[in-house]
Amino acid sequence: MRTIIFIAAMMLGMAACAGSAAAEDKEPAAVVAIGGAGEWALPGAASFGPSVSVEVAPIKNWLEIEVGAATLFRRGVTEFETDVVFKKPFTLSDTLEVMVGAGPAWSWTRQEGIKWGATFALDVMVWPWPEKKFGWFVEPSYTINQDSERSLAVSVGLLVAIP
Image 1: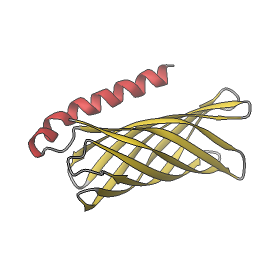
Image 2: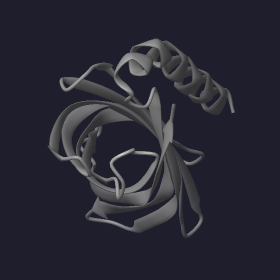
Image 3: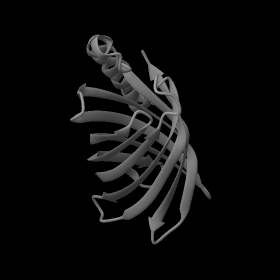
Image 4: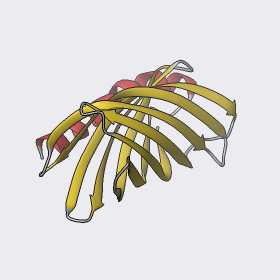
């Protein structure tokens, strides 16, 4: 529970800090991504569940920081995951962005406790309208943890720009 409160506070703080910079260039202060995630252990079981993240751009066209969380379910196990991904954005058009990034990741299950590791992500954001108020995303990622356990994941969902 403390982790969830910490993540929520961190996301709100990031959105507040980004507000002034975004007002100058009409870019959103933050982007909220809400969707679903699937994760496949290599080798191992598959897990599925909801995901949410907040993304801010402290250095326009150079750095975006995403703080995300997901709750994944598989037979008899609930896993809480969070990560902070530092991304390099590439704007391909007014309606299409691609980002490549990496950062630390943490997960918790009742059976295994806390595990930490690194995640590598490719993020594709599609904004159907140039105003960038709403859109959708696909984000495949690869994670390796302290015990050398590896997994592939995919998140898909809706994007909501916070002015």
